[in-house]
Length: 139
Image 1 (tube, rainbow, N blue to C red):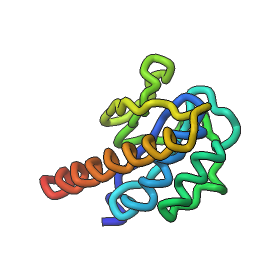
Image 2 (cartoon, rainbow, N blue to C red; image 1 turned 30 degrees about the vertical axis):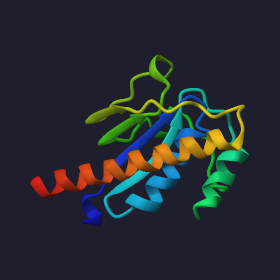
Image 3 (cartoon, rainbow, N blue to C red; image 1 turned 180 degrees about the vertical axis):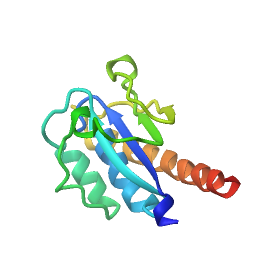
């Protein structure tokens, strides 16, 4: 199934917290069925240290990730584009399917907010994995 993996792009504003967490969890949990990427509409240029810390708590290292913008993926075709609560701030990015996950931005808040965002994203990615597997079985 490796050759048939879907391409998933997780989007938030700065690509420093939520979408980085989603990319890391997606790579960790879903690598057998999808390729996980992330980008921001206004990339900050860095990954938030608290995002790195809460990911280490669950055994996922995103410390070498970089904050990316849409221009990094201008020639890519995605099966799914998932926005993580940025609504109208994130411009349309072409994909076969668009999904909006309302995840509160933990930036500027304590580590507990990052943990809540991480756990919510992890749960939604687990659901996405089930959905993609189901779609693959139907195809």
